[in-house]
Image (cartoon, rainbow, N blue to C red; front, side, top):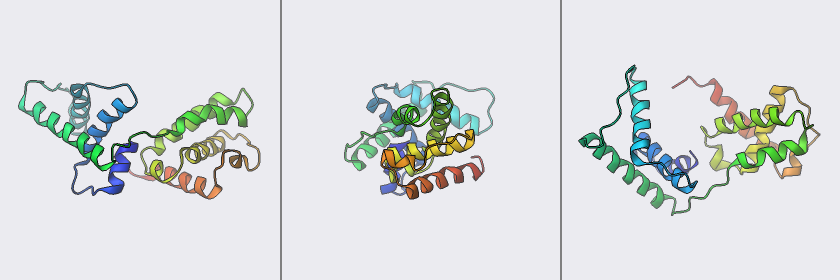
Length: 188
């Protein structure tokens, strides 16, 4: 999702089909994170989502010998190439998830760490649906997620704890605002 957001921060949604770029981003992210997926697997997932959105109850797998498969495969490869070109082949991203456990262990009692970490993880996952991943450092996103999680779980954290992780309260508030706004959007 970070690649997807980075791409659309530079290019227009009107010029590039979001569905093809989402598939291209997923395909490319699998390679970058060293868990590559086959083209047909990525295309079948997107085919399934498309069928589900259309209200289908029986889901058909793409025939790899069909013209439709060939066309979708070409679009996927073209989208991957566009993303690589637009991002200048700079694909590494530091994810906020990697900080959660260490931050939570430093901030809470051992018995509260798993609950806090899981709730913060959920908020970070949701934050990926917004553009905070390209606006703020991963440490800030992690701190915002921990802060929201602590409020939900009614856990008390030390005063100004975020300063320990070089996060500004204003940035955390902005992240929280965008994530919470996500919950008030109608479901797509």
